[in-house]
Length: 394
Image 1 (cartoon, one colour):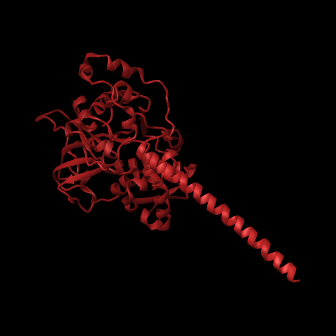
Image 2 (cartoon, rainbow, N blue to C red; image 1 turned 90 degrees about the vertical axis):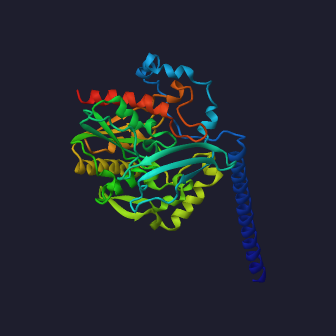
């Protein structure tokens, strides 16, 4: 009996030690991989993975425009820049002057501002730009001429790509559209860092002043889409890792096919901590892994949020065209969520294959930071103006 008892405990101890040894080895390997990935992010020994991009030929209209005298200023461009530095932006710290000038609606108070982008590692300035916010919380751009015949509005929604982060007020996409279209007054409704979920929450707030002061009777609504909007709606690990404060953005869920606003992402509690830790890991960054893994339900949710955005806009304005503009080199997720759009009035202008970086000799984005340049906005504005005009004749 004693031998059986001793044998049992010896076997149990051996199994315990084997399991313990396996756990220690596994944790050691995981730790080694994580340390290597973190060091690689800093020193750049190996090129990390990146989400797949579609590689269809660029729109021939774009090459034709590039060759026309209208773009003679492109001939003065410098030699191609280091695309690697552009594709792997530095860690950027943004400083806004004056600080803390926000309204309860999350918009900046009226006034003049300066934003400075600094390399977080070296403190070196990447860029600085000035902008002005009007009494409705919108960024001011190109002012219409006195006694102009501009009778239609064009409302531009989106994130920092719409706002024009890093470029002058005359170089934003809405400003270039207004100059290209003599009948239109552009309104920049962009809010840096916002996703479609935040935009929908703002649109549902009748007290939000951003939609006040539009004097034209009818016009178009344009939502500028980039692929990064999908993780913003989901509150994914990659998005929280870059901006931990996003746990205070609005969270939506689908319930029996209908949208339900559940409050802020913060209500997810400990799940946010897990997603944040994973998103900040070297492993997740090197292998470009985002959690949660995208599913059909996530694409349905995103499409529903976009549908509801245009429904809310139409409640406020007389809209001729509801348009989604897919920014160049984006649109990878478009085929996944587009089939779930239910609003038949939405039209999509898809520019994902324009390859601005090739046409503009790598001057399409701010080097080391990643936002579009005024040059990129100008080229895109002409195509959007032409394509919107074509929509009216269909």
